[in-house]
Image 1 (tube, one colour):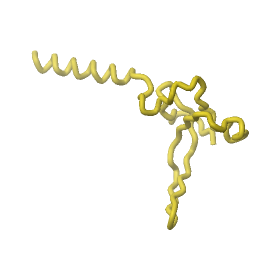
Image 2 (cartoon, helix red, strand yellow):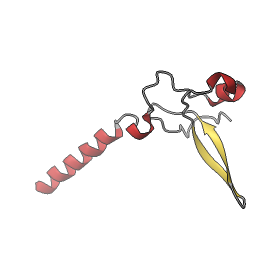
Image 3 (tube, rainbow, N blue to C red):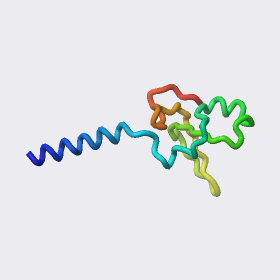
Image 4 (spheres, rainbow, N blue to C red):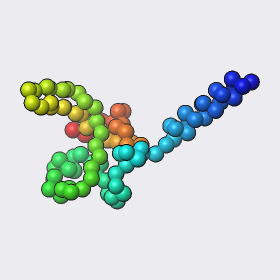
Amino acid sequence: MNMTKGALILSLSFLLAACSSIPQNIKGNNQPDIQKSFVAVHNQPGLYVGQQARFGGKVINVINGKTDTLLEISVLPLDSYAKPDIEANYQA
């Protein structure tokens, strides 16, 4: 019986954790409009100077140089939890 209760409590804990919101460490500083459209920023970067932005994606290539590293990232839209939506089409 105790093992069943423990399993139930553990399962409920995981369920609640799955329903959590955006983590505080990536939430931003309460600026009302965090830009999420990579295409909009890419097309007119001057309009977004000084604004917060949050983009997501998948690293598709890493090129290590002598003094720097270049990451090639496929840009994906973010879901409501600020995670890349890997089922969506690439934005760039």
